[in-house]
Length: 218
Ligand SMILES: Cc1cc2nc3c(=O)[nH]c(=O)nc-3n(C[C@H](O)[C@H](O)[C@H](O)COP(=O)(O)OP(=O)(O)OC[C@H]3O[C@@H](n4cnc5c(N)ncnc54)[C@H](O)[C@@H]3O)c2cc1C
Image (cartoon, rainbow, N blue to C red; front, side, top):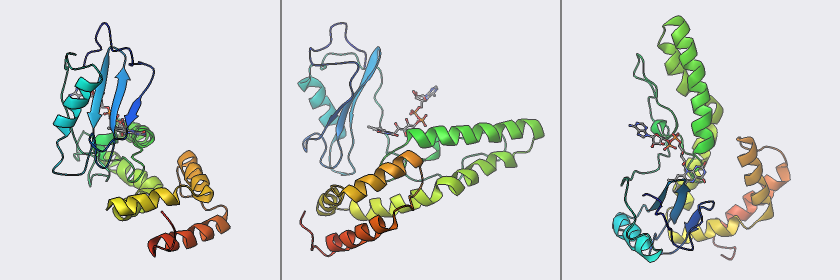
């Protein structure tokens, strides 16, 4: 929507708001993201019966943007699985969200969109210099060679830990652990599964098992 000439007093165009409230989203969050002259207000949910439109409209009114001019309404699932093909075999290649490279579990898509954009640029340069479309096809293979394992592991985690509220709560408890936090941070920073500190993995393994068996407190 357009940013009104006089936005509500609470609005700060240097701040992203992330709102955890069951009525706005039972299983995700609602957001207000500033984009200069415009801003986006949205929410997400995998719960099929939940009305995203109703939730966004209600929140818009609540925070004083009820009368703001809507520029565009859009919605799409976050693409958490690389598409089977990124090129058309001739002269087109997609990257980023269009290629489905948002990491499961974390929802991290910016780094992967940039990484895949860079690889696609190399592929396009080779395609332009040789005229061979196989260089476009190779981009996806190269990306999955570098990041496929991380996507696979995070996909398994998402399917298991995000499948019910109870499991989500257990997952949150696991994330309170210092070892888990350190490994997650390292994995975020280095973009690969971290092998260092084998004892931390062992400790996490036993804590995971305790959570799975319900022996650890949520
Ligand atoms: C609520 C939410 C929170 C997120 N949080 C994070 C996070 O914390 N960290 C993270 O890494 N990722 C996050 N992501 C994911 C991340 O935003 C995306 O994965 C990333 O922006 C994808 O980049 P992209 O360039 O592929 O697509 P986009 O950023 O969507 O860029 C596509 C651009 O193309 C433009 N466009 C569309 N159609 C046309 C057209 N026909 N002609 C011209 N232009 C067009 C669009 O306006 C847009 O500017 C989040 C996503 C959402 C929805």
